Length: 374
Image 1 (cartoon, one colour):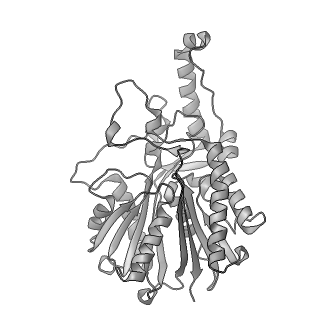
Image 2: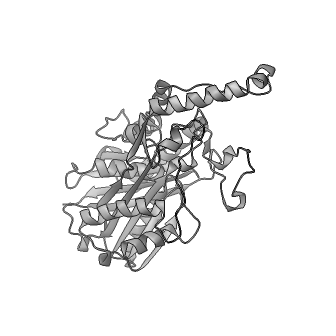
Image 3: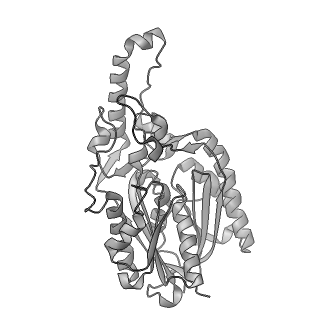
C-alpha cells in the first residue's frame, strides 16, 4: 500500500494587517455614533447602549494582537464595518480561488511538482464564495491540473478532513498527488459591530501537497501515520447565511446570517472533546503523548489551546512545543493549524512525531499524526 506524505505546504498572506488598536478605534467610533443616535431610546430603556471595546480586552480574551485581511478600509470605516470586495465578472478568477492558487503554487514549487504530477484538488474551507461551480474545480482549472476536484466544508476542521481524504486517495491508488487548499476570507462573515466577536477572524490561504512517498522528491517529508475525525452536532457556533435567505430588506440587520457563537459553551464543551479525541487517537496507535515533539493546533483562542495542550501532554507546554500564529493572523478557521505547521516544522528531525489538530463548528475535530521521514 502507498505511504502518503506531506511533501510541501504553501501560504498566501493578504497584504493588509489590522492591529487591535486600529480595530478598536473603528469599533468605538461606531459605538459612540450608535449611542448618540439612539440616546432617547437608551434613556427610555427601550434600547441597550453599546459598550466600547479596548485592545487589552481583546488580547486577554483571545491572544490576538492583529489580523491580515483582504480589504482593510471597508472594515475600519465606522459607517460600513465590513470588507469591500467587489464582485468580479464570471470570466475572471474569483477572489477565493485567486488566493487558493497563490498558496497552491507555492506548495507545488516547494514540492517540486508540476500540474502534470497532480491528480486532484480539494478546496477545504469554512466558507465557499459560491455554491457552484465548485471552488476546487476553478482552482484546478487555473493551475492546469487534470483529474478531479471538489469542495469540503467542515468549518474550522476542513483542512484535517481534507488531509484524511487526500491520504485515503493516495493509499487506494486513486491519485498520485493531491492538493488540499484552504482559502479563508473569514472577515466576510464576521460581525464587526459585535463587541464579543469583532476581533476574532483574519484572512489567509494555505495549501498542503500530499503524495505517495515513492514519488516524493522533497527531502524528509512528513509521513501521515494516522488520522482521526470526529463530529458532534451543536448550535453553539453557527452561521445561517444561505441561498434561502439571500438578502435582508433595506435597513434590516440580520446578525445571525454572520458568525455567531456561545463562546463560553464552546470553550467548556470543545476542550474536553478534543483532548479526549487526541489521547484516544494516540492510544489506538500505541503512542504516548510524550512521544510528540510538536502540536500544531487550531488557532482560535490561546486559552483553549493552552488547556488542550496541558490535558494532552500533562503539563504546561512551551511555545516551541505548541507554536502560536494566532497573535498575528487571528483565527483563520481551517488554515490556522496549517499556518503553524508551515512556519514551525522545518526544525523537526527524522523520526520525530507531531500532531496537526483542528476543531470548530459542528462540532467537528480532526487530528493527523505525522512523522518526519528519514
